[in-house]
Image (tube, rainbow, N blue to C red; front, side):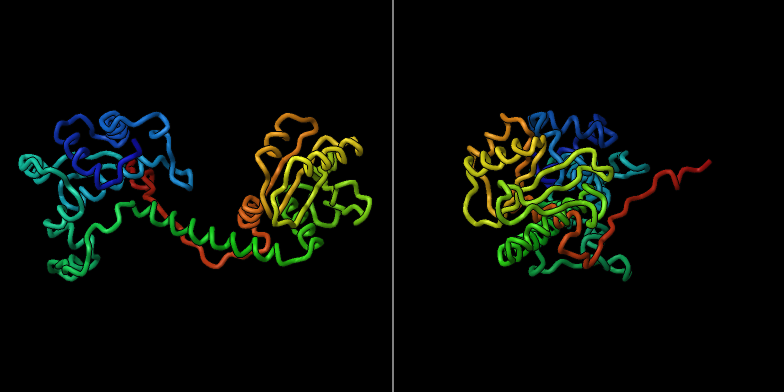
Length: 307
């Protein structure tokens, strides 16, 4: 099964603390994975950023919410203990614990609604304010929003590439490869082959600043699928130049036969479709510019260690 959402982990995590089977997130993670029958693949699954496993992230947020409801105490980062209130909750044998359940505690309502505690009074939850509309953790919501913005930007980039001339696309390709670290500067990085009689090669770029090897480029601003015959033509051009490396880049996509073909040939040929190209453009700031940055910070545990 997939990794349960953090609300599903609330009650099992509290039980582990009550039974004193887990007092650290690392211990809890292993026990929760076993309790829910998670596969190795599920245990190793990570957030889109790759910074943390999904299970660790959701277990961490579950412990955070339990703490703010007064059911757990966390004396140190990654460590937790059940409180007397937490023991009372377990004694009630609830069928499940979710944010709606935790809202019975004034501390949690004040924390969740941001302001009740600061004003010195109890926050109230109106019927118009759903307490658990989204079971994703804040990290997952943030990363999902970022992914949506990136998808939209990639789609717009691809539209702009398709609207431009073939020569413009070839220039973009060279600029992208330079931004990725190939060739050094634009002045000495790449050179174009003539428009006619190019043998299926649109450009050549140095693999590094010293030019120890060359990468031959084919850039096709197409909307149709690129098939194996197109790749074979490019490979033939590479062999005619005694070239060992090539990159075939297109605004469209590649057929399964084309993708399979390049895995079984020499020279080495890398295929980049429209989606991959636009993602690389975004990653390396080619044709795009930053608008805003949001820095997510965590406690520096070493700072609070007393000598």
